[in-house]
Length: 170
Image 1 (cartoon, rainbow, N blue to C red):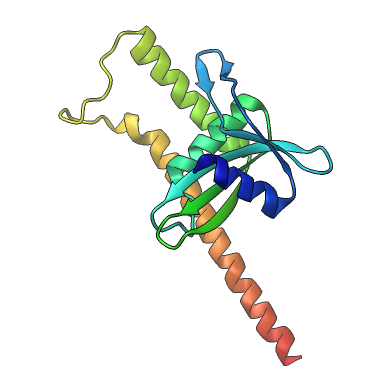
Image 2: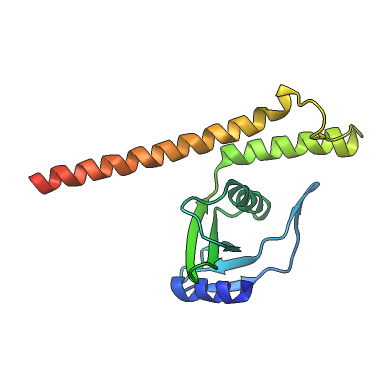
């Protein structure tokens, strides 16, 4: 399905899509993005392909973080997710823009994990053992950012609705 979804994306957006075959690497951090997109102005960005049973209104956090990881590795500012929804045979797409704050936290966490567990030899977290509170600080920070952005988006939509109602009355 991946090639089919990529072709749909190219047609819908009138862009050129090229399959990526290169593993990007920065130090110990690596990733293999699905596709590169080039629009009519020459702007280049990433495209990740997904399938979903029922689709999503909001991009799942793990997919968003995957896109952010790839943007960091490839030094691009945009990653689109194109998704084929199996249950109703539809297509949806979402755009994620680079966020250096989240990127910094991801790099910090990955570096800590690498140094602590891979280089330092410490045993990684085992779900059968007690979790230390400092191990979940980054997750909490990222969760707070996601919640803040969702709240901002909701408030912005409400403000636009009120603005439209006011304009309609005038």
